[in-house]
Each structure stands twice: as structure tokens, then as C-alpha cells.
Length: 178
Image 1 (cartoon, one colour):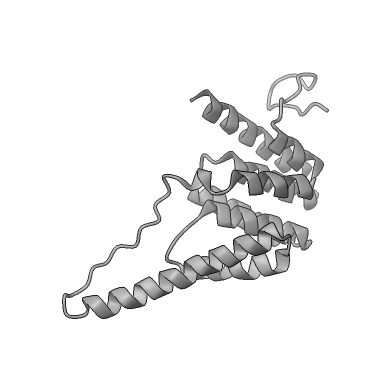
Image 2: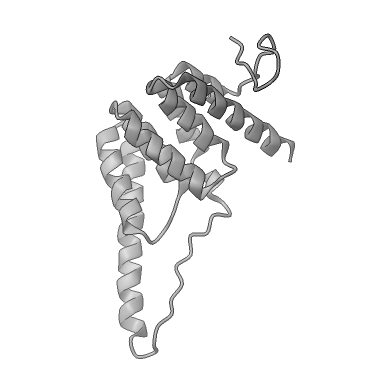
């Protein structure tokens, strides 16, 4: 099952990883298993900091409010993760949306998981939006490209999907060399 690479001969197959293969086959169950195994390890190095610039008088009240808001946001992610693990993708979408809308932290993995949850609910356009957001947060993350490919295949955009598979494969090969 060869995939043409840009200007190379169509006879030269693209060597896909299991994630790339799952996206090529549009095997949502396999994609789910891979994302579940990956966890959040690829979020390392992503800025998740909230900076406080406040006056001393308001410090305690503002910190308390922010901490509670962050705790709510983290709880949304935790509940989303539980729903995702249980394959309750509608609940996962709702909880991950609360996390994202909280706006205190950014996680490409949350976007990836909500993307797959949208795909599982037959909402490929919404899924594509999340795959693109995951790439915006983490531009060198192969997972974002693979998920975009799955979404594009679902939308019937074969050529764009193939390009994203190629880009994801190249990034993954580059990452694995380091």
C-alpha cells in the first residue's frame, strides 16, 4: 500500500508508523488506542504557565480565584480523560471543551483527544479544527499531522490527507533520530 511522496516515483512506498497506518486506514479504534498509550508525554516543553501581575492588596483574593479556576480546568481535563478512556466520546468532548474554554492552560493532547472524539461522533469538520489547533500549539508534533490526515480522509480530501501523512511520517522520523 504505497503512498506517493511529492516528486518521487509513485512506485516508492512511504514507510508509515502504526499511527500513520491507522490514520491511513481511518481505523478510529486503533487511533484511540495509540492516543491512550501516548498519554501526555508530548506536552512536555509546552508552556502551561499562568503569570500573575497584581497588586499586593489583591494578591490573596486573586490567587485564590485563579487557583480555583485552574483546579476547575484541571478537573475538566481529568473528567475528559476518564470519559475518553471509557470511550464515552460525547462526554469527553464536553469536558475537553470546558478545559479549552477555561483558557488557563493549553494542551495539544487535549486537542488531539477531542479531535478523535469528534471523529467518533461523525463530526469530521470539528475534528479537523482541533487537529489544526494541536498543530498550532505544537508545530513539530507528528500526531497533529496524522490526525489531520484522518480528518481529511473522512472529508474526502485524499490528496491533502496523503500530504499530512507524509509530513507526519517525516516529522516522526526526524524526532526518532534525535
